[in-house]
Amino acid sequence: MKDVANLDYLKTLNRLKVLNLIRENQEMSRQELAKLTGLTPAAITGIVRELVQMGNVIELGPGESSGGRRPIKLKFNPEAGYVIGVEITRNRTTLGIVDLQAKPIKIIEASINMSNPQEGLLALKNCIDRLINETEIPAKKIMGAGFALPGLYDRKNNSIKHSPNLGEGWRNAPIRDWLQDVISVPFFIEHNSNAAALAEYTLGQGKHVKDLAYVNLGEGLSAGVIMDDRILYGSRGYAGEMGHVVIVENGPLCNCGNKGCLESLYAVPALVRKANNELPLCSISDSLKQIWESKGQVTIEDIITCASDVNSYAWELIKQAGWYMGTGVANLINFYNPEMVVLGGILAGAGSVLMEPLIESMHAHAFPEISKNTRVEISLIGRQAAFYGACLVGIKKLFSNDRTENIYSMTVI
Image (cartoon, rainbow, N blue to C red; front, side, top):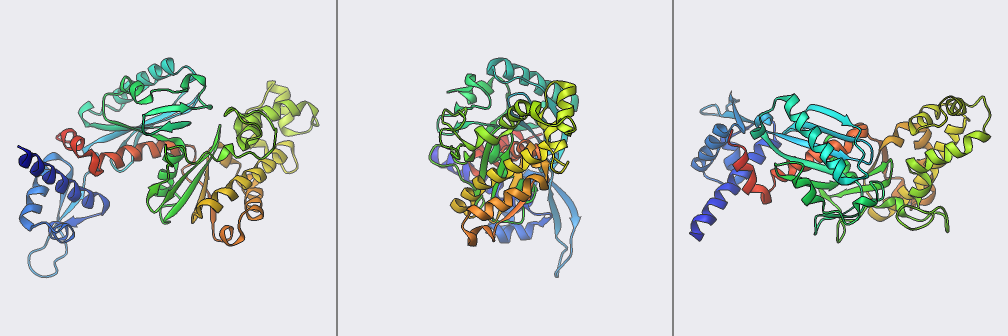
């Protein structure tokens, strides 16, 4: 029985190897697959026949001949299955369905208060059910899901040890157990900055570089780092908490418990709080002050919009934030020496007002030979980077060797 099990596993592994080669290339022939895998033509013919029957591979017709019979070209079928992606933040959740090449079918944003995880995840379950119903995709074609969340995700114990940006209800949260009540397909969990880094590395600014750091400039400040096609996690998965570098000794209390962290001074909540406290002292002619007078308070969107007014309060505030964030980026590139740093999150929407002082500060504080060879770019994917990263985590895991027991039981359609 053991020999039979080993044979079945080897067969499944070979099938996955062939499928991944077809998936990662535009078109391939049986002859090319045999050459690349080392499998016999007969074995390749049998594997391809099964993949075509399962709907994972499409025969395109004859290709160019190099002598003899013209080879039949094969193509991966991205519509063989679909993956759900979810990015969770405290008050806004992005969710959607993509095909197996991350092409979106439908993406929605839901205003869900996640400070109470049980209530928030129940609302999320209802949103996912509605999403599937609205797309009319058969349930058996939903192959998996990926979830991106902020906080310290303990990969060994499948729990969130602490997520200040979600709230105290997420301390020592058994997130894998909770999500099993939300979704019935295989699912995978990733830190939001790591997920966004994967999206930029695969689909965005970094798809032609080898090493990349993604910096999330949002409710929190954190980084995802990819080196040689691998996300850097650290011993428990907590790597990348750039926002908790102390820049002001005995400064404001941070939600991590320390004082003077970069995040406590220049993440979105700190900037909004600072603006609403200081705007009463500003000139009535200031554009952001006028919004404050009208609405009674301002949002980060208001601040970013008004930051384009040179010498205004919002312009000064964003430039100041950019300078101090540049010190964090300088530390990041000193540690990891990535080829590219991609800036994402809502604050990246401030564009050059934020970028110019950030890059100036980075060069001022980083090792010169490192900083001058590091490109800094703003994400082209924008605020949906972590969502797409969650989708890619799902797809990547489903097609990895350690998922062979799931993918073929789910793709017989």
